[in-house]
Length: 209
Ligand SMILES: O=P(O)(O)OC[C@H]1O[C@H](OP(=O)(O)OP(=O)(O)O)[C@H](O)[C@@H]1O
Ligand SMILES: O=c1cc[nH]c(=O)[nH]1
Ligand SMILES: [Mg+2]
Image (cartoon, rainbow, N blue to C red; front, side, top):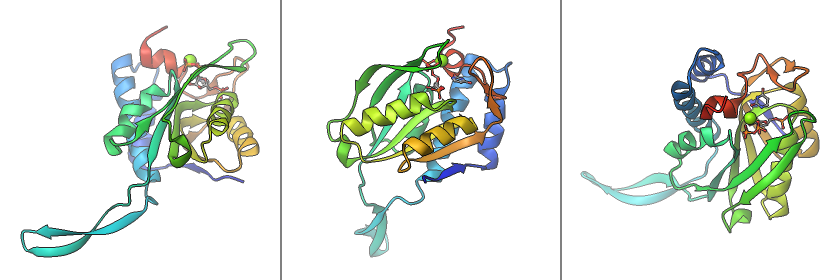
């Protein structure tokens, strides 16, 4: 069974409340969603490997730590996942970015894949799949399948708001994929939205409603 972890850092929780608020407009929503993405990646990269190199400080030679150069990639699930990418790249600017386009049928809630473009060495990279919302888990599961089909081996799913149903669905289908969320919310409503959630993340990010 994969790990599911809620990142309880006070800054993450405070910022999540800002974007949950229906009175928060597109500009602030976009800024704060990216900030949360950045903070979440800070929290989950604590296990990145380091190596020692020799450098020279103004005082003389010394062995010091740098990242060991593990290859990383950020994979936003379009559209809403785009709202976390810039935040992630603030901390890991050398990461490659792969895109997976997915939309959920409003009636059936079933996901449909419409675009996949990934770094060619996807099989060598540790992937951070980002999407603000994990509701039924259908979109995340289809994105993970699309990645695995193309050779991806190591990936984690990073979401802002998760519903219990979505966490269970991903854990059952992909026990090798750890899930990180800023919140585990109560439920999915009859219309397929997470409650209390934050509404339609894509529409709020891009102002399409
Ligand atoms: O867990 P699920 O039940 O699959 O729902 C979650 C998905 O729904 C939203 O995308 P949406 O289909 O609204 O597309 P958009 O990002 O283009 O708005 C969201 O960004 C997730 O990808
Ligand atoms: O609450 C939800 C569920 C799916 N997609 C969203 O954007 N919001
Ligand atoms: Mg949407």
